[in-house]
Length: 313
Ligand SMILES: Nc1ncnc2c1ncn2[C@@H]1O[C@H](COP(=O)(O)OP(=O)(O)OP(=O)(O)O)[C@@H](O)[C@H]1O
Image (cartoon, rainbow, N blue to C red; front, side, top):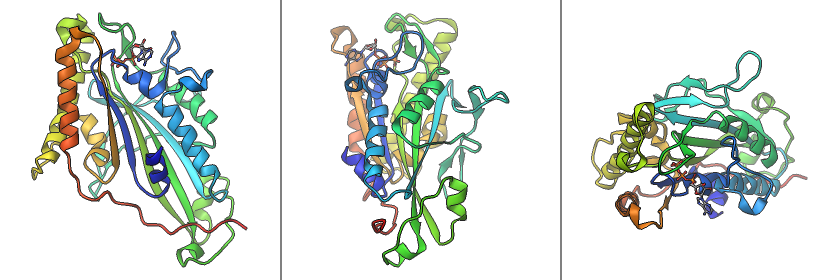
């Protein structure tokens, strides 16, 4: 919750779950899933995972702000076999289907996914329905360790646009206007926008091939998962050791998360650990990842500078 307050105060925030397959990452991030697909259940609010819960909190915080001053857009991306898929892209009939996208580095040195679909949502319930539709496209595969194992990394991003009128920049009191679309917002005279980003990441599970018993296509998936997770650990190691070169581009996952992991975002890593003694090696490996993440020192987290909004009259 304090991270979400920071988000509306102008910080980028990233929350991610890491752990071996079957340890509870998806449960932590989304909550219990429906049997037939990846959608999460919204019937019992007490069971909601971090992604829906954080979104509810974001909208609660926004409701306390002057009306029309915040705008929320959502994107849902999965990284599968080192490829990026846009899970909110629609075909010509308006049906969602995962479209392959690329990740690039912009001239300012930020990572970006050109053509990625951003959908505007006005409340948490719109968000639930939209994300649940996208999640049904997510790849999963049964393994000996976990019957509904996610085979991809999931990145749900909320982009919060704060609209500040020109007058507010001079700290003068003004009534805030209500815009009905992002286009209208941009067109509104004397409006300035500040964007902050909340990235919520359900990583695919690290996996010991001997234990999970995967073969064929699933084995290929496992190898991509393990490679991308070790690329993430390498990036954290390089940042922790303050090496001049950080190998973000060694995998699409690290390239996509570059600004959150190595940039100016507030980053929270949650480790999911199995209580079963059989998985001691995997648990030690996850704790090693956590130790590495804790060694990262990135200096002062930067805040996007924008003035405090004056209350609507
Ligand atoms: N805290 C919990 N309470 C009840 N059930 C849980 C809890 N955590 C996990 N589970 C159950 O354990 C199983 C595995 O959890 P989950 O799917 O979250 O694992 P995962 O780490 O995401 O695995 P993978 O990386 O293979 O996708 C699921 O059936 C889930 O409902």
